[in-house]
Image (tube, rainbow, N blue to C red; front, side, top):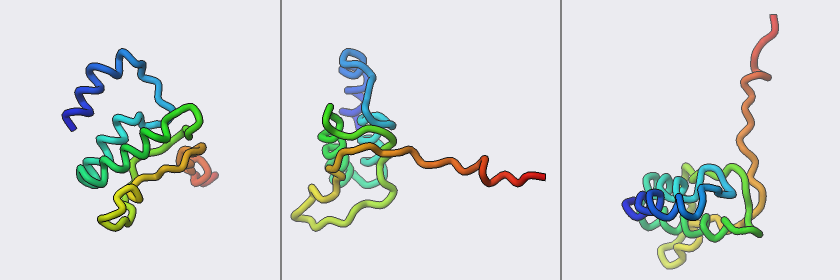
Length: 100
């Protein structure tokens, strides 16, 4: 977590704060590590960083709530390596309002 914070303070302002995904890759990594621990969260963050490139995906991509199943000898299966557009969740508040 300290390395992520160090990146946010030092390199992120120099590189630019534009990320193809929301939340940003560094926020995704911090969330994944908090939710799933250092080992699984680091693999998830690595997969996300590999997707964050010009031919990768973009859109809404938060850290998963449930840890994917993966054998101890295949930790790369914890990450989501597929690119593509990721739509934000739909907000159905307005369609749920009843009309009087």
